[in-house]
Every structure is written in structure tokens, then in C-alpha cells.
Image (tube, rainbow, N blue to C red; front, side, top):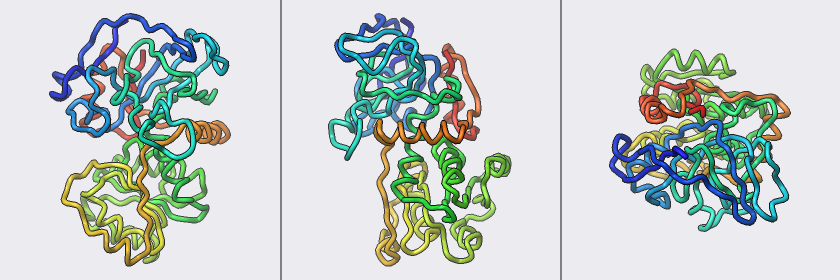
Length: 335
């Protein structure tokens, strides 16, 4: 089969290669999935450059995100049959309960082989059934960004009437916006581009802030919340935005620390102490979380936001477009 592999840590142009690999065969307890679509996450660009903890396996088939149909099952498999529509969990071996080192080392497309191939082999415990109303392109967006946003908002115990602050309009933030509205919360979205904020308002954002116009954007959050501050923030920027997030969140509020898009020296954590704020480290989620999220998506017929779809042969171009940060929501590769 014609698959993709990351063969070095020299950056996208050198690292990502199209290669011939044998078709996988299922062993006991394993499932072969014919992949119909993939999607990209910021983490996928980092893996091509190396230095990502627990994600330095070489060579490795990239991407955590993919959806498709069960093609064959191995001996002893009882949960799945040929034709089932499935996706795989980001961490292959985090089924339920607290995370541990074994789970952390099983992240698809970094620690172990991922999903950018015509066929992949996975243990039956790693798979979830995708909602019936979603296309494969839509379902492929769920494993990393959607589960991360779901885990963050549920860990922060978001309630109806609370305010959730979403930084930017990438995959996690847009899913965070959709889930915040599903939970009955008020959503505040930031971006440096008015056209992206227009799209966010179309998805239900109650307040939008252009941080190019308002560099002290935490002040705009306070204005939008009557001086109180947000109850929860999905912090995707990391060190570069954390200081303002701490200022934008109310005393006793929560910061779900997810990403590292904005590099800077680490800020003081004293405000979190003095304001009794919770900082929650969020690293995607378990199979159990994925299944719970999918039930909510199916019940509300929520549809992921797909910005652009690239053909499988143009996977490198999909990476480049994703890296340009022009997208709102998810960038998808269709087989």
C-alpha cells in the first residue's frame, strides 16, 4: 500500500515521505480499518521536527486523526465486524480511568504508527463508533481536537449560563465553541482576523475580540463579562497567552491548559494562587471520553467545521495549508 511516513526530524519537506508498505494483517484482538479520511492538528507539524516528548519514533506513519470502515478482524475480536464505521482514539491504549505512562506512549502518529495510510491495524479496544449523521471527512476531525475540547470543558465542569473563553479559531477552539453552546454557556472568541470572527459569530459566539486591535484582550473579556471574568478558558497558546488568560478568568475559575502555539517566557503563576484559579493540564482523552462525546454529538446532530478538504495524494499540501493558519476549524485529507 502507498502510505506516508515521517522518516526524519528535518521538517515537513524532508521528513514526510510517500512509501510502499505491505498491507497490514490483523493479529489476535486486532482490527484492520480502511481509512477514508484524516485530519490535521498542530501536534502533527511538531512531530516532523522532533523533540516532542514521547513522539520521537522513526519511521512512523503520521496523524492521530482518521475515520473509516472495518475491513477485517483478527481472532477473538467481538466488538467489531466488517463494514462498521469507526475512528481510533488519539492514545491507542488509554481506554478509561486515569492516564498513565503506557497510555501516554501510545499516541498515534508519534509514539506509534498513525492513520495516514490506506489501511491501519489497531487493537479492538482503541476504536469508537462514529455518529451515523457524520461523513467520514467530518468524523475524521474528532479524535484529537474534539476530544480535547470535550475533556477540557467537562473537566472544568462547565455549567449553563457560565462564560467560556476560546482563544483563536483552530480545531480545538471551534469545537470548544460548539460544545460551550451545547452546554448552554456564553462563548467569547478571540482572533486577529475579522473574517474569522465573523465565522465564529455564525457558529454561535456571543462575544468576539480582535486581539490585533485589542492587544490587552483580557480587558475586553472583563468588559464582556461585566467585570467578572470568564469562568473557563481553553488555553491553546501556552506561555505566550497564559498571563492574560489568568487575568481574564474570574477568581475561582478554571484554565484548561491545552496548547503551546504562542512561545514566550513562562509567566508568573502567582495570580492563579491569589485568585484560587484552577489550572488543568489537558492531553486529549480516553476511549470512554470519546464515546461519551460521540453520544452528545449524535443526540444534538452537531456537525464539525471543516475548512478545506485535500485529496490523499496532496497530503503534503494539506500540511502546508494547515501551517499557514488560514483555516477556521479543521483541515481534512480524503482518500
